[in-house]
Length: 169
Image (cartoon, rainbow, N blue to C red):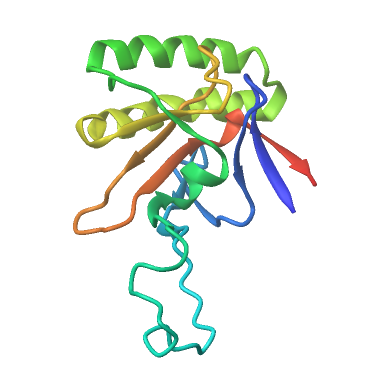
């Protein structure tokens, strides 16, 4: 299994269990998230509680919780409040500077060549984006972006591919 860590914070942000599609010449990865239900496991053991004197309220008090699989698996933290355009551009400038220091050779060239178009792509969706950070909530770490495509019930996540380090588990 491959896990993808943020190059700046070391937080695990993704794994190969979640297939991705490349956008903006490979600078962004698009990943489909899914709402899943956790808890509230209803196990039918074949007993008839009413015949055995049991009531409807007997048993485990289990609460079902809906979570997004990627957010839950990698313990992503919601960054509040969302960026406005000025804050977003300021954050991106800092992120590009910090990440560029970690890249070299062809990776650095490809990142610098295409990061502007990727940033414009994100800016075009800014009002629809949710912003997540890794578990450590590192100030200068990478941000994971999420939004809902038109008519979609499940979120789509966007990652900066060059900001991820592949680690074999």
